[in-house]
Length: 190
Image (cartoon, rainbow, N blue to C red; front, side):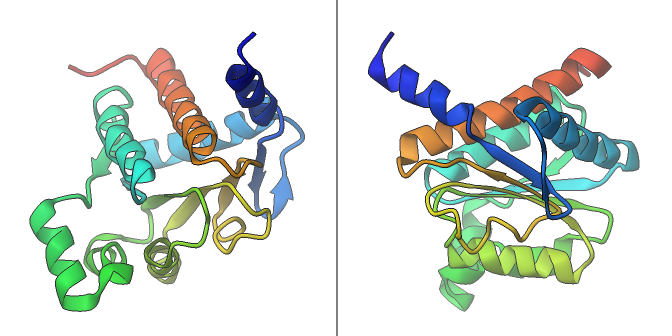
């Protein structure tokens, strides 16, 4: 087997998914926990916001579309060019997500914060706003086990690896697995 694929499989086997400050006993149990959170928000008709930078922004944008189209969820994209550049220009890049969330996020909503390093200031600020508004937060991080974002969500996914490609691939895979499970269970709206 290819060395990269072997490493990827090994990392997947060591992913830590926690909720309410407690690590889930297995990957399968963690996925069930995450599926439950997304299902709860789907039933409530919550807005779901996905955010990230760079490759994580691509994952966030992709999941915004998939969770809407395939998952039948009420997703909202914070990646409008005019809004993003306005927020960056007027308030600074560290506020490109938190400033719009101050207006948009509500107490029954969900923020999915994706940050490989777990140290992106704009992600941290967005989590702070979501929590202040009473919204739920799911974090996806990697790199250092003690990263800032790792334990800030109602549920947290930690990928124990220092390579962007592997961390981002695992984040994408887990989010894709969950929306596929939702689609298999509920069907797809066209």
